[in-house]
Amino acid sequence: MTTANPPINVAVGILMRPNGDVLLGQRPEGKPYAGYWEFPGGKVESGETIFAALQREFMEELGVEILSAEPWCGVQYQYPHANVRLHFYVSKDWRGEPQSLEDQAFAWQGSVAVSPLLEATIPLIAWLEELRRVI
Image (cartoon, rainbow, N blue to C red; front, side, top):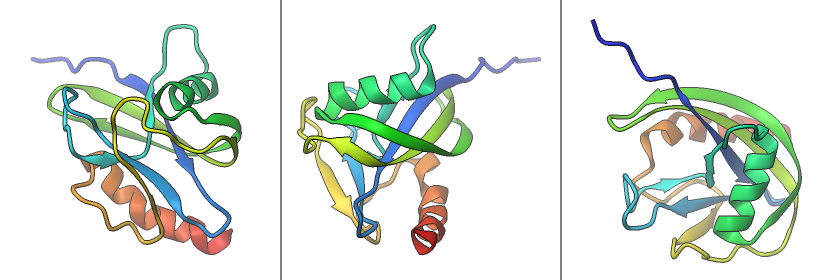
């Protein structure tokens, strides 16, 4: 009998502009699933809150300071290389313009048209469309 590894907690942020556009980033070379598009974020470190991890990751990856964000949903997903628990937050309140600090591409999207999308991101696109309708 095999036991699955405990999930790795990951803070994921959806920056949303007033018009509903959201920011997606492309995973850089050297990381699993390089070239795939996802919402930015990263691992929650030991002793760190999910929101603190979100703030740290956005500063490290994009040079953006997250001022506030609302928890949106959680998704657990088993990739071949890792079991992850994704904690999604929506932020409409940040400071700075995204910059490519880790040599990753990024794109503001209304209707999401980039591909390929990271597998765990795909179901969220439909949910995001519902979220946009209520903002």
